[in-house]
Image (cartoon, rainbow, N blue to C red; front, side, top):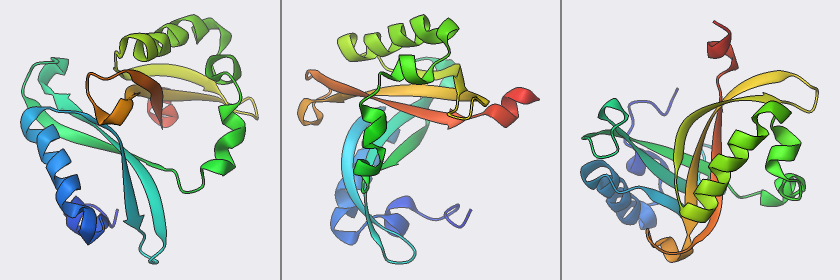
Length: 170
């Protein structure tokens, strides 16, 4: 909540990187250009240096891919301690985390993202935790391309998940 109503770049981005991050955000907002996998050093309130992987996606009127840009969502992934999460990287995503009845459709969406470079936003998914608790997630994907080139070969797919269990229950 402390972050609300503060300029993103001036508040969170190291001075040496502000110009390039601001440029990327302006391109997203003014031109509708999405950005994937921009590595950024970030200093926390306690002055700890963290490494983030940023991606942006534009929000457009009525879900129209060519409509006017209403805003930009910035997704940040803390990659400072990637090794802590390495265990999950060695397990197939769908088989490990997705309920059997949804595996086919989720796998299809991920394959489209990986093979065709198709991004996906706001896909609702039921998910089982290690403790077998049912959670509702809102998934979006973004493709990771070679050298940040929007038309280059797809190197991988990042999946962003937002827990919407409380919202889905009401």
